[in-house]
Length: 194
Image (cartoon, rainbow, N blue to C red; front, side):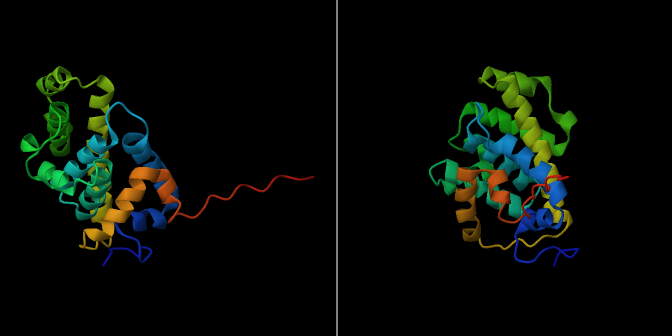
């Protein structure tokens, strides 16, 4: 049962965002920029970073929905998502992504945990400064998103299948487009007439 009176029938962050649309807009725009917009780091990799941080934070909703989005970007490879959460160093992902997940995990513990050696290792695997920046920001943002979802005790159904179709749709359409389903439309102001 949510701690406050959130709109019913909306899972996880969607109910919190529907409760306060004026804060939802910048949160969705940040997710869009970090996870869906064109980037040298593939969308599936960025979603795996979000999934892994959410897993470390024990946020069921975020790790499940973003794991579904990641899988949708990776030819529906849900097993790969599970392997990344369990032991990313042994998973069949690029060495570059492995070094970025090390950085993300350290940000999840506290930003000061990231070392020059971690960044050097990522650069040695071909990570650009933008990719390193975005990894740090994805990890930091998902610590916030996870705490938002769990801090309000949002409704998080435990059936993973419920998240899969939404994951496919978000992978295709992005966060800003998908938010239109549960956020009231922003009406255009009436023109001033004399």
